[in-house]
Length: 396
Ligand SMILES: [Zn+2]
Image 1 (tube, rainbow, N blue to C red):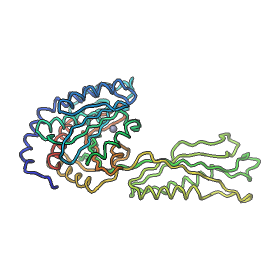
Image 2 (tube, helix red, strand yellow):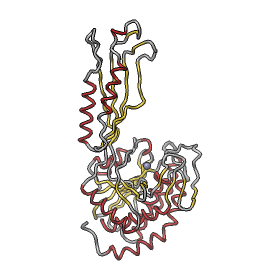
Image 3 (cartoon, rainbow, N blue to C red):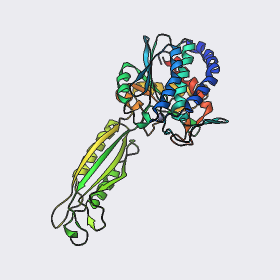
Image 4 (cartoon, rainbow, N blue to C red):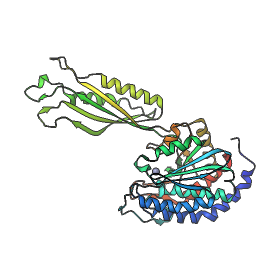
């Protein structure tokens, strides 16, 4: 990487000193914000978390503001590149009255609501910036911090802000939590896109006994279509197609062949070639009648409505380059880390879809997200902080 400066060696010990200085404060801060309930619906709780973040950002010289919908934005001006956007979410899945509220430390494990997803990442990003500030490395840097409050509900009110900010930057860092796979930990430069296809099949309804021969059975037609749809799955290509449990019929009486049936298919894909292949497949399967009434010559009609819910995060040349640097730094500091494709989306999908290099899953390592078993591996908080700082000094 171009920018690997002689200063790395000089910065090295200094960074470790600053981490030593700030680590315990970062941990207390994490516990403090994790114990504030900030379920996506709990606006008051989210405001409290924002109030906890604000002084830290202001102290570093950020201009802190609030966007409509309770999203925190903080800007620092500078001329050096890359211009960096730091993304995170302040909300959790635990609704206001949820009993999972306390943070408990057991040896190397920190249990608590949102510690992994993603208040650990919020604490790490803020204290990472503070370490950079203290070592003079934020000087003349353009950094924007955007922490939204509705990620767990699909970022409905914040997506437009994210998509407006991203193109003003060269690199997006998302501090969603890291994961553990065996003796390695993971981060993310690739995620699957997600969509849904709704099929509506119309046939000929009749009494199940008396007029059996006149019917065009939509349930039978649906069964054929589902078997065909399943065949579109391609694990090697990162594509899955799953008929989902939402099935609606015009008539659910036992002795009637219904007029119509609607069913949904969830699909996930890694890139746009696969997306196009699926769209063609869905249309072909919709247009192909599998059941033909031999007496009347009638077959069922079918319409398909396809919606994309989230674009895929597709790696760029630059993100692959950064990824191998992150892997290398991980080895150097004794924190095994590798990029892994992750199912499930993040706000990084929106920025990556705009062509902005996006690196995700940089937060501390944890598991049990979205359950009351959520925890964080405590040593990873420090390791991932060090990783972030070394990544910064090596690459920017
Ligand atoms: Zn999250």
